[in-house]
Length: 273
Image 1: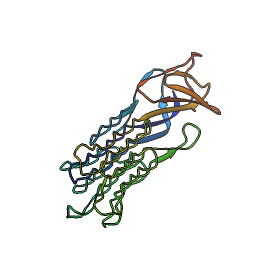
Image 2: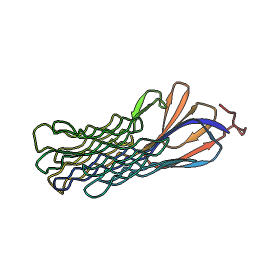
Image 3: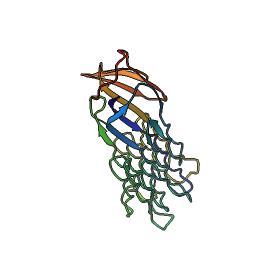
Image 4: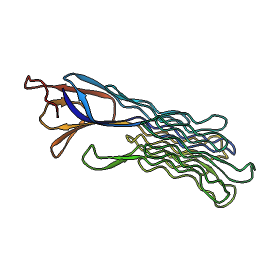
């Protein structure tokens, strides 16, 4: 047996769709799990990298061994609430935000409903791995909710932030309301009376929520997930994914599903790292 470092991030949820004067919430980030001492043995491991969800739809799970990270929740849209996920989706302007999964992410943010169709509306931001989604400002001179921030991790040798939530969409009927920004770590920005921005591929970022006015405006798709494995070079041999080195470590990055095959070329049992 040997211990490796493993990062498993699921696909982000899609931002909520706009419909008439209704705005969509931001998609939740894909579930984020990091293990600095994951035990492996000599075998082939199936690696599943979850894709991002389409508009208003949850992302797909990512799996490595016993670790399953849950896809991000979809952002809420008119009459359809945000869904629970690795991180929860943000609320549409008249609905409720969704919870995240304990140990993987955070809840989405609340929306803002002015109660007057001639005034502003805003969706809540999707939850991120490192922070809850921001609620839309409850005033006529504010912003839809920003996506929650992702989490930084240095498994590849340099610090990279992933799994940010998507920003909420906005309908600006007066002159000062703005859509929510995407969360740091690949979250897509929300739109003002338009289509939300997609989450960044292989970050698990949530998609941005759509603005209102036109039923054809869709929320941005969630970003696909990623699985990364790192271990001390030379302790054993392995294949699969894109292989790089970082000082004394070998790093396997799976941007799509595949197989991580561990072998013991010297014929001895693995030593614990």
